[in-house]
Image (cartoon, rainbow, N blue to C red):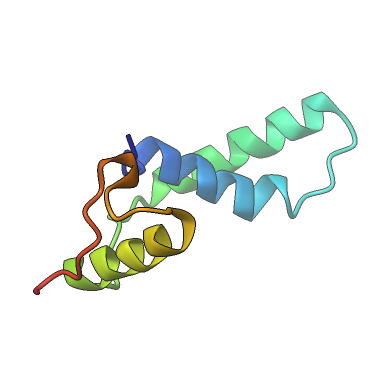
Length: 85
């Protein structure tokens, strides 16, 4: 069953996108040092996650995606109906 990403997964996604994929690390030690510095900076000015879409927009997007990847309406336990309908 599909589970929504939790806060930890979002945080690791940001770490990966902002530091690991963009960086050039010449050693494991350099990577460790960069990750530690990134964490220290992150913790100095923490900010809450702000949703930019409504729940209906997210659910509709999920329904559209599932309609493309499933062969029946109830595959994987998800009814495919638009939110608000």
